[in-house]
Amino acid sequence: MMAELIKAYKPICCNKAYMTKASALRHEKKCPKNPENCACKTCSHRIETTETYYNPYHNGDCGSTDYDYKYWWCEIHEKKIDVYSNSNGGATILPKMNCEHWESEDTE
Ligand SMILES: [Zn+2]
Image 1 (cartoon, protein in one colour):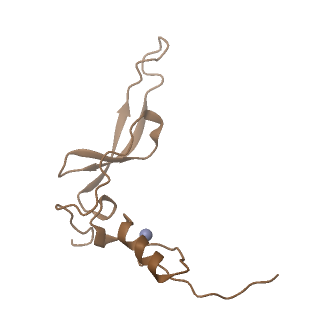
Image 2 (cartoon, protein in one colour; image 1 turned 180 degrees about the vertical axis):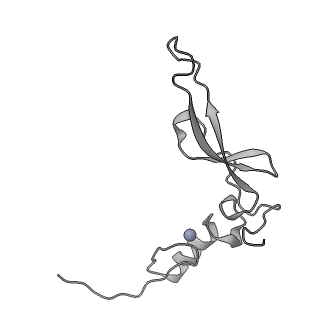
């Protein structure tokens, strides 16, 4: 096996490697996991919650196809942030960056 040792740059937020410092920094600037971006992913106002999906097309067996799904909720904007799976048609609604209400998750 042939392998060559190279130098790479890792952004502070993720376990990724970039060949140039510029691209690592570019990643940090737009990454929702970087607390400096004040994005929903790192915000203490993001609440994990579940809701039951009531399927109206239940083939006469009411409730048989209902299911619970998990999503993230923003208590400030009172909006859904992100749904675990998109199978119920719920797309990402509030993936906010540089939010004015952002608060760190580890302030408590
Ligand atoms: Zn990142």
